[in-house]
Length: 344
Image (cartoon, rainbow, N blue to C red; front, side, top):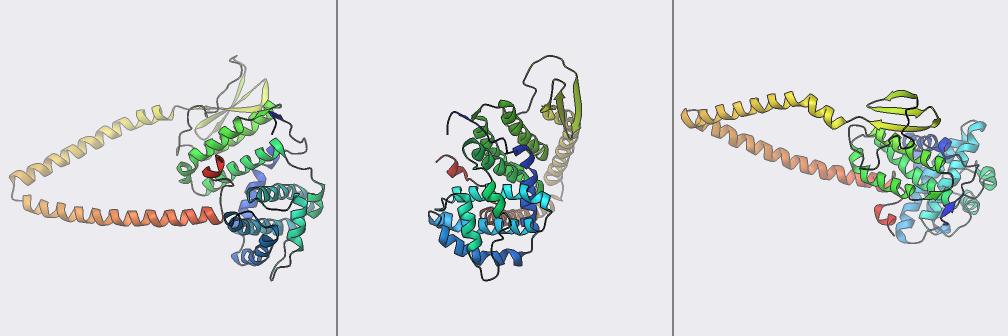
């Protein structure tokens, strides 16, 4: 890739993200399992023909192929006006699948021909996008790299929207993707910055109150320091600011959540501390100077035993959750690149 890349004017990432990836993920998740299973045999045969490089890529290809086939099945049933845009997204997803699994077929249109030509026992891959894939420009260089990273980032946000507790799990990985995008030199800096700011805004809206952005990733007003008239719009606990001189650019000014939390929680913390100290002092006096000491000792031992049992249950629950979570990520909702792949 050159130092400065030019993006194809026909590729509108701001229109594509997050609309199409959310559509893609929503349909795959909501679709009946029996339909998904019907695409597995034909994808296994395609796997043999396209021949991904290495056993790991061969394992990854079939579930990805199944998901793309489900998306094509969805495209068959939408309006003609919507088909071209969805087929464009499919085209880029297929190129991403071919690239990351190091498949032998090239270009994308040839791989798609191989897929639709394969006859499965139950289903065949729909050819609904063949015309559009043949006519689409080649997505390469900066455009394809940005597509991959934006797709990964919005994929993370989509699944965090389902479970906000995943904010902590994905936080560091998310900002590593952002760092990679920021390091590109692109001649249209405004478009490049808008794409990055938009995805950071989306992530920070979803994870507001769950994680704190690392230093340098807060979206702030970073152009002129003049006092132009500002239009304020409240978004949860953040202030979205649009400058009068540049209405297309959105910046975020974050509140000092730590200070707000400290001021509101101070009195509650003091009260709780006084109650705990009083309880402990009373227990000590009863134990030391009254006949109830032996009774208290028995209760304490029983309580400790219960706590130990609960702790063991918690450990088993966490281990079980981690196994299930890892399997779901590996099989169905994987981010396109692992951290290991990132630094190869």
